[in-house]
Length: 196
Image (tube, rainbow, N blue to C red; front, side, top):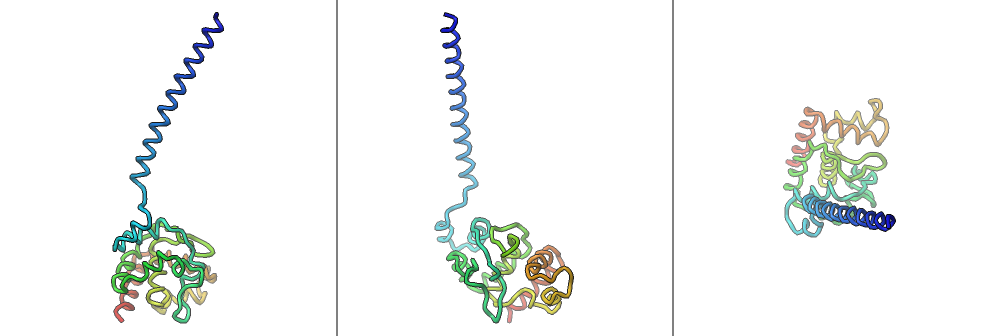
């Protein structure tokens, strides 16, 4: 008889624990769904139906993974390699087709942003938003940032240590964009190019 009571008691405890567990998991699932809805990024079709540069930029820089495969720089007025996401991703292609005036002004306003993107600068680091804006400006204006002013040539020519590696141009650009004086200089140089 004692075994029966123990068995019934354990059954009751198991049922109670299971019911509590199910209740907790249902509540947690509901909470998780609500959180997901609050932070959910709209799908790309919804974003692309809008005309907002800001929405498209946010989507591309924060949600779309891609690689520049070294195609961020221009050679002989041609930018990008065959695998460069700016040249092959349909959303980037569409974004870069905005009117030159509005797009360049918009991108210049993003140069200060050091938030990391999902765009990879091959073969090393993820680009930040200011850096990605610079690469977009290079594609639109067919000019590299280091060609904006003679003072930047020292980075390209390897005159400064440890700036002799090609990839280090990314590090140099990130450093320049973080420096308020240099950021102002780069902004001014890009604006001068646009006015020409």
